[in-house]
Length: 294
Image (cartoon, rainbow, N blue to C red; front, side, top):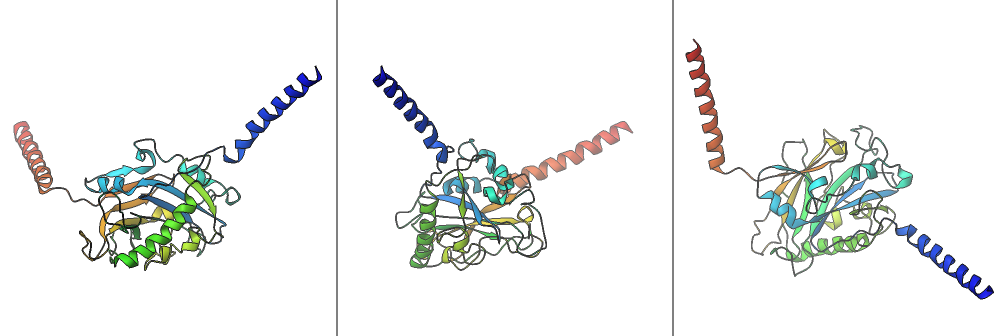
């Protein structure tokens, strides 16, 4: 009888431990795949960064080929979406986020959340039919809606060095604890050597020549007042390289954490022709209707 009680207690204890053990990873872990692009948020003085895996760069390459705007927050991952990243951003700094005013356009230097997007095709193997060490990075429009200057493409070795830095960061992101609001996002301490902040995304992201986040001054000082253009940079000498990055589209962010991507594709001339024809027919019918009534 005593042995039965001891065995029963042991089983109950084991069950209790099994129930408690996953608590530290109750939300699961994020998974990074080669060729994914990452969205990072930082705030000067905040002890945490916030990183979101937006999925494969090929998704944005596909979007870039057709004019239009897509709500990435809900459309990413074949419609499964990114999760509630707004709830993560709204959480207090002690919980990892940036607080209720994360989206504010403040003119107080050092109090604004900055964000940017980066990715690569990893090494010499490449992804999506692109050469290895092709980079994907954002450039802020100095005046939202006014466009940006395309970054210069550089040699395979130069872009390879940048890709190597990014891949070290991505390795640290992979298998990190996901947040309670998104299976594709995590909070990380800024003190880590491979953290988003440590890789200086506002000035020289991952050792590259440019910053990928919006500046801390001007009309786009706040994250929801910013527009970031996404460029594809193929190493010089490889097929498809033109010496400067090709724009795929731009990212905007709403105060409710909705991330949108607008394609840089220009409508076909036939589209303009149809629009023009529609306008002419509209004018004709209006005039015809007016003359009939009179």
